[in-house]
Image (cartoon, rainbow, N blue to C red; front, top):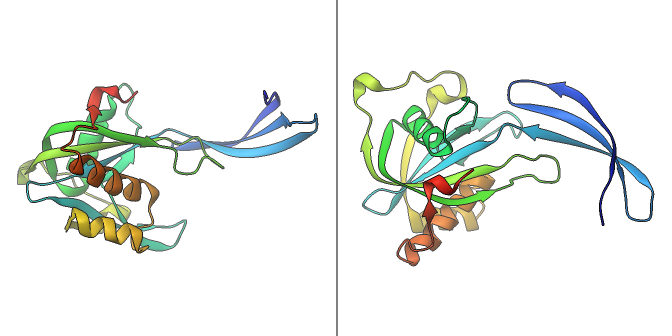
Length: 194
């Protein structure tokens, strides 16, 4: 079945997303209006240290009015920037870390019922701190981000118990544990993310 789009109307646009309404032909020939968000895209980083711990942050999210457990992550909003470079930038900006080894862990659509957003999740290993002189000055919600090193198996437990509800974080933690349990052989090259 091809869902023909009869009309496509932009309702709102900002630097992160746009809201559209499409009139779509449904199975049987009826039409329906469907609203959705077109998003710039995002990257997330599952940074795992040599001790098997994952780097997590707690960040306030206005849409859910809660502080959530999350991965270092951010928007793909720098023109021409490679996705792995965006991930490296976010890791440095949010938790003052760099990584020597990068792999593509997975890609997810966190809310396909209302958004086209795709988050590319990278696994970062061989972690070192950013030198003090090169650290990013964080503002707004990021100003109080704190790095928490959590044992990867404990983080899996946090996903399964409902402590971690951020979709990208949950998928990233579970994916990293899966990859680790298979000696990292399920990973793809970082450049595979497009």
